[in-house]
Amino acid sequence: MSRLTHFDTAGQAHMVDVGSKPETRRVARAGGHIDMAPATFALLQAGNNKKGDVVGIARLAAIQGTKRTADLIPLCHPLALTRVAVEFSADAAANRLYIEVTTETVGRTGVEMEALSGVMAGLLTVYDMLKAVDKGMTIAGVQLLEKQGGKSGHWLADGQQTDAE
Image 1 (cartoon, rainbow, N blue to C red):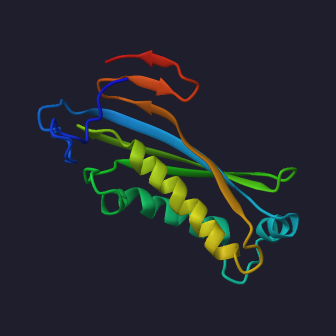
Image 2 (cartoon, rainbow, N blue to C red; image 1 turned 90 degrees about the vertical axis):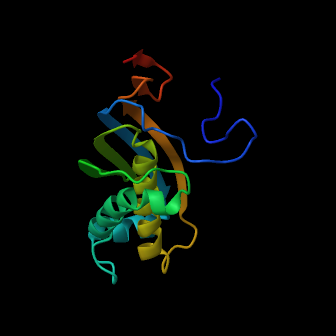
């Protein structure tokens, strides 16, 4: 395991200096899901929630979450994202809504935290919009699925590193 980059030799937290790193195309993909009661899932699928279009608003929240990552996570660098994509899919048998967020930039540091922040913002928005009918919803499975770019290369969640740059 490599050393933790957000701590100096004295153990003090600091923002990593990325000034000497080359700019590369960086992509990250993260996902997660929210489980809910069957009646709540039916309400979500019907699209007639009193607060509006749950998935549409959650998509916007996910995008906003990616853009505000540096405001939420103290040691993240503010990044100029070049692309954010948000996809939802539903599993009716499990009463589960999945989200996947892909972030991209050309820069000196990765966009993994932005993708993960987008997932959480999207899922929390679904919870917020449906909590009046189901406070027992569960957010789970939030994880990085893939990252590309930078020194560590292409990484997939199944543990395979596919190349190094």
